[in-house]
Amino acid sequence: MTEIPLIDEFLNYLKYERHFSPHTAKCYGADLSQFSAFLVGDHARAAGRVSSSGGSRPTTPTTAASAPSVSTVSTVSSVTGGSRAFASGDRATVLTETDISQKLREVTVDRIKLFLSFLSTQSYSKSTVARKLATLRSFYKFCIRRGYVSEHPLATIRTPKQEKALPKFLEVEEVNRLLSTPDDTTLLGARDRAMLEVLYSTGVRVSELVELDYGDIDSERQTIRVRGKGKKQRISPIGPTAITSLKRYLDLRRADARAATFDQHALFVNKHGQRLSTRSVRRKLDKYLAECGMDPSISPHTLRHSFATHMLNNGADLRSVQELLGHQSISTTQIYTHLTTPRLKAAYDDAHPRA
Image (cartoon, rainbow, N blue to C red; front, side, top):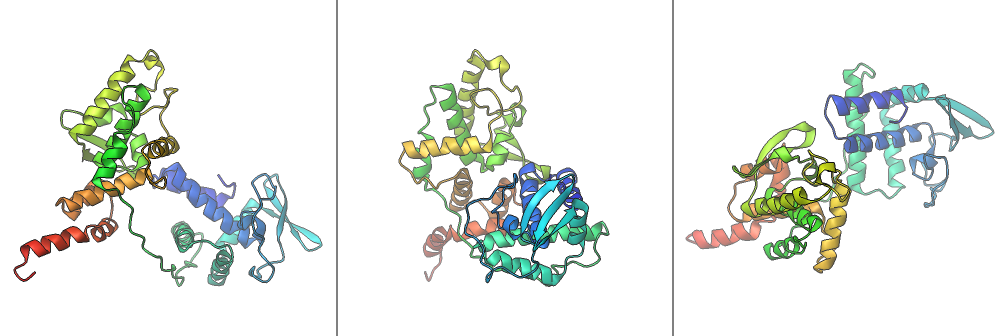
């Protein structure tokens, strides 16, 4: 938590009422902490050059000419007893966390524009700036609902246009090569193959993969229960190849001498028997990418993109793929139609009388 009352109240709202993941709430908190630092004139902390312990981080300093002139306050001197001391010329200004909450309530459109100007000096990408603006929009929408502010300070602020990068996906042959790389004669190898098979067979997010429990797998019906964003659940089909890999992994797991000490709910566990983390899944994938000589930039999400692209290429309709991916809006799913244009062109050439 940030220890700034207004921000912490918002983060609790995200976690306990909106059911945002702890990771997402943490990202919102980081954006709002940066904005708060900017409001009180602590540009060093807002630029990420001051760590939480007060030490400096080696980054390119913002020059006086490029930094927006909002306040002469520039450096944190201490954080003690619920207050923060800022150096301002020859005097020190001590602000309590409640003072900072009040500054957040008093924000104007001009202050938001100055913050955007500040971000532009820090070489952030358009997508990162857009995310920070989205955080502020959500925060002030919350403040209006709670009666803390009367007008939305971002009402007239436009989000910068972003370049829409097409999602990266693997060809079927590449998927087959990757998925056959883990050695499934060992417990950990069988686990890794099962994980990769499930990712590609169902298109689940890696965060959804690691949340799977034993009871979420229905081998007879060949389905899994997925807990998606916002705690929304969906039932997703899973292919027989993935089911076979899961059964092999679970057989080896049950036969392990330490099985009784493993997490009895988690489907995928690490070598210590605890639920696997998303970071561990990424590390395992990196290992197999190196082993089979594939692009190291491939991520677990690439398998999700590959799932959606291959489904559409083989005739699945967009609405079905939307449901399988757990997308709230079909516009999110529509980006995959750009990847399937060659298939549509081929179908057009085969079917249209004047093609």
